[in-house]
Length: 286
Image 1: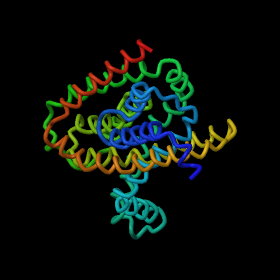
Image 2: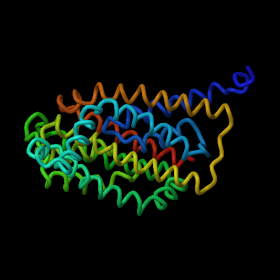
Image 3: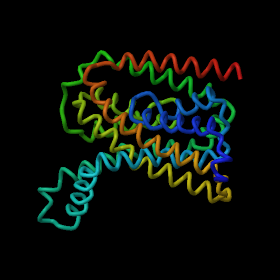
């Protein structure tokens, strides 16, 4: 009863909205980081416990990714280690082994840029969050518009090592706020003439190691700064955002393939242009 009495339901609604935004934009090619910054401006939110909040909402999306690709991950892990330790199974498992290597290659550039630029990005978000994210959203919009004329249903199904290197290099810019990771990696694969289902699968499997790495860095940063639990009502707000992120990540998965297959990326491009412009205007007005 005491907890209910201390709940600010308007604040709770704001955190629910941020969780929803994080979930659906993690899957759709419109940048989760850019939208979280935009809605923080729209909702006039100051999230002082930002690291813990980011871990929770990202974990919500991460759990959905693990569930959706649970069979793929199981087959990849089994095949990878069986290829190494059971020579007689190598012919059977070589496809899984090399696929894991391709994921590793594509992960490296973003891991390097994310690690090297993290402090600069964090400082930039503190000082120029809306401006920073707005510009990134416009970059995402431009890329989506340029690729929207491609034929998405054609192409080869297997990701080659050259494809993985190219996708990885493109992914290197995605730690910047406003740059859609899922959008950039999927578009990069399409540009290399990869068939859309394979492009989306590779893009979303790439999210898993990057999410693990970024969460590990955030957790280390929390403990280095001295971890303090937020107040009980804010724990509730964070849990609500976490659950909203799970639900709306599922929603995103249900609509992402039809978007690419029907070639409707230009609409997301127009939307990102508008969101980016709005973010910049709100920053300047603030």
